[in-house]
Length: 311
Image 1: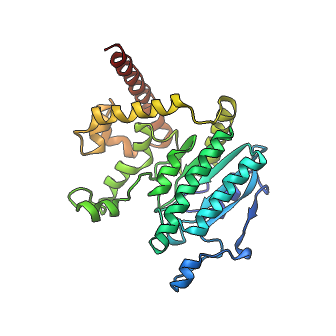
Image 2 (image 1 turned 135 degrees about the vertical axis):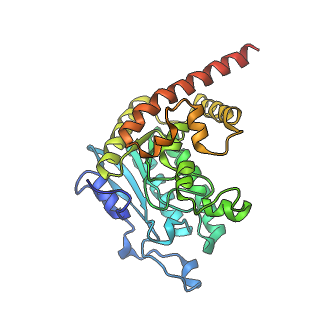
Image 3 (image 1 turned 120 degrees about the vertical axis):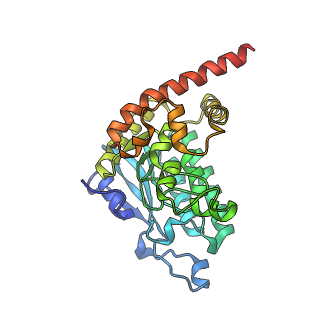
């Protein structure tokens, strides 16, 4: 077993893709560093905190990127974002079979906020262009820094998200919420609460991610292969029906769960037996329980939609 959480960006790519198939684009030797950090005398990285390149996954040609959480928490700056955009544009130009994004980031760098925000918006546009070209985009989240900020939105623009229980996904991080709204709103020191709210299991139960796996690169690889095969058969382009289904899901959440302040209350509302035991379940046991209730929630949403249309 090889921990995804503890691996570096390059280790994740090397072990997730077919052995020896990865070729890095703009490696550290090319020394593409952020001009903004250098002007501020801040530490720089010769790859600007993201690894991009081409490789194979089960023999299919893929474009892959992995953010390095060890450099500024994987935060996005101008060069970092440009590398991601370039990779996505290359996927369209060369007709890749899929794009794999291993995201680990706290969002945009404060050091280059405007440039970073523009970069994230360009990443979103490029990702949707990839999907429009019929190329599936698969996001993996399992790093210690989670996936927050604008890149959290990027993740939800993808075809599929695969998370471990240790992974986290949200728009705003716990510290940001606490700073803006106070500790009474969200105590970032309550690590159990943080993972219950933003962690992989909660995201899976709410329908925000497509698979929960153990903290093992081989498990992420198997799930990514399965998602790629499914999407290559069913199609990757963003359809109106898919957007409408997402909207129904969000509306259902607001109606059903707006009075709850604790994730375990939502789990109980979904019918999960012994919700307090959810954090102790391994990925397989959790998925077996969760799948029954995710299906029930989607069926309930469909009934509500049909009832509303008849009214």
